[in-house]
Image (cartoon, rainbow, N blue to C red; front, top):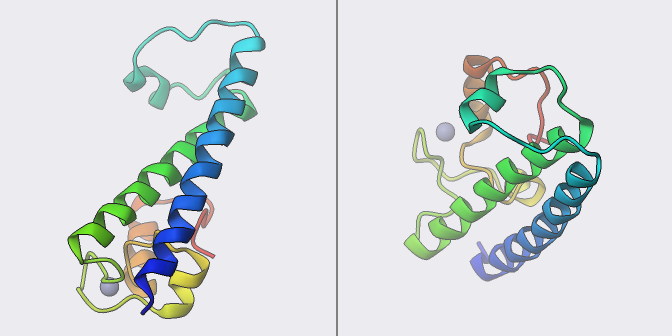
Length: 122
Ligand SMILES: [Zn+2]
């Protein structure tokens, strides 16, 4: 596996996500309503969530995953499933370079978390 190549891809994705988040934050601010309250409140209240806020939440979740993956590259554990320890499928890493789980365990995670849509999993 060419780790350096994945690292470059992840760094590119990180840059793009940061640009996206900055843009979406700008949109959220200019739309009026100042953001008050805790992160815990924001997670539970679904009303009044604008599309750009949801997009931003998705982007920042992906950013966290991308940064995790970069840490795993540093730690030398990149490409191994966090659940079963087997190597993650190459095709899966091509599509989702920040994948933490192999396809099988990702499915289990999705089912356990009741994620409405597959999101970043292909
Ligand atoms: Zn696994």
